Image (cartoon, rainbow, N blue to C red):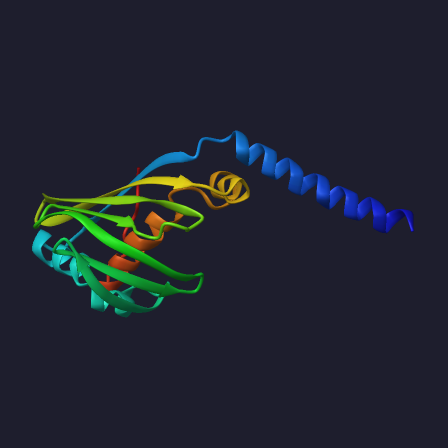
Length: 172
């Protein structure tokens, strides 16, 4: 009887410690990752703005549903392995700058991604900056110490590289 109670108490203590630590972490974070592609800026731009084609190269997505535009800007819902998320474009300056943000008001996290494209030796450097906020303290802890703030950025850039048959190295 003693060991099960000790185990339950230890698990509860661990969850409490994670929650308290997460509550002490800042809600907001910034992470930047970049990668170089051999493709020209226009080709990278076309790919990262072709919303309906995202599932063809982003393996984290099952589907994408276009929603009515807001103030003339694209809005869409991505359906992935962790559920659905609504996003919208808030700044569009072809072919060098795109800003998208999470448009779900009740998500456990929010924020924006700023995509900046520049020419580099006949190819393109794509820099993505995430300005995120994580509302749930447990998820904040996990994002900081387990997953890392740049994991999703790295995955996106590597998926984009695979689309073009390139192995890309991401860096801050």
